Image (cartoon, rainbow, N blue to C red; front, side, top):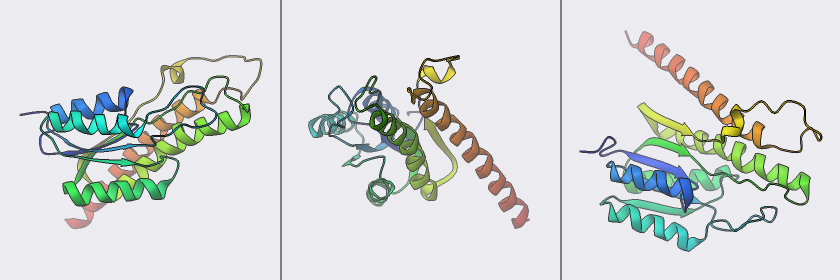
Length: 198
């Protein structure tokens, strides 16, 4: 029996890379998966992003592990798209227990620079916030929220020649703060619920 047997995990950025790895590993440990990815390129990113075929391969690997999967093309920058994906997954799979907010981009030296900066913030930070927010109504006691980021969040950037030119640090530090805030507020709500029910 796996560590997450019978649970359902929602993974963003699931079509390839770390997102796929998380989805497949969770499936191997017994979870059904809601796998979400944009599956198209973003103009300021100087490398190819995942494709619909990549998302299909993730679904195939999850099913090969003996688990069910709901694979949806959706943009983490759009909360409504994410909410629809999660709602569909919960309808088909029956519950939600784990959130893995993994989607992220790194358009180093992207052009135009301001748009590249904005795209990083919108995917890496706003996308994480959206993933957590749309999942919260479906999560019960004992649920897990995992927001991944870069080790750059732990680095002291010190003085830089062009302040604000690299959104990576802000975009990777902020999700951890969002998770702490969610945990604190959820714990406070839980305590209020327990004390109110006695």
